[in-house]
Length: 274
Image (tube, rainbow, N blue to C red):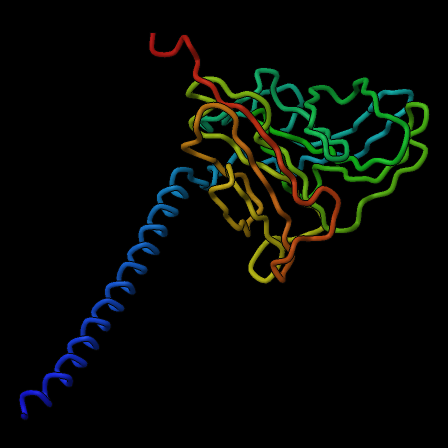
């Protein structure tokens, strides 16, 4: 009689034990899936590397003094003890990245368009009539901007019949995209791709502004130092960069052209390795 009474109790205990084992197995499987997902994501993010570029040639006294636009022609005045347009930056061969054979130049950015490079202080350039945002800054021959606080001009302008009829300095914080740009060919240009941007009226740092960088929708870095960077391990073909200007609360800054998205192309040199 006691045996018959114990049997239902044993069955209940056995069922409860099996349920606990099944539940534990489900929990373990769930953790395994999450870990596998994390590992896969980490591997993907490590495919590209964003590293600070080496310290470059200093041009502490380089200055972009003035900018005029009349009858479709820009005229810039600049100064500096060592900086000269059209000359090669002394450390260009050591930087191991794309370099302009035409030397140092002015990067000219109109609105949200990619920059154009100019190697003389005077040149013809067509700007449509209307209101525009213009940034011009002095650049080393390997396209790294000079960030000394004096080597740029940023203005809101009104153009009519090929001339400025109104121009005023931009006073609010703003981010501009510079590099990467265009096509990169061969090991010298594709192994290390320069990432360079220009910040005005803002300071990057902890509790201050920052720049979020997204590479090919896979790698995101929050940069809190205004300096050039290298992007390494990029694949051949089309690549995409997205920059987001962030405020001290880690919210996107309410400014024109934020975020900024650009694409560029990398390709092998068919003559290399032969």
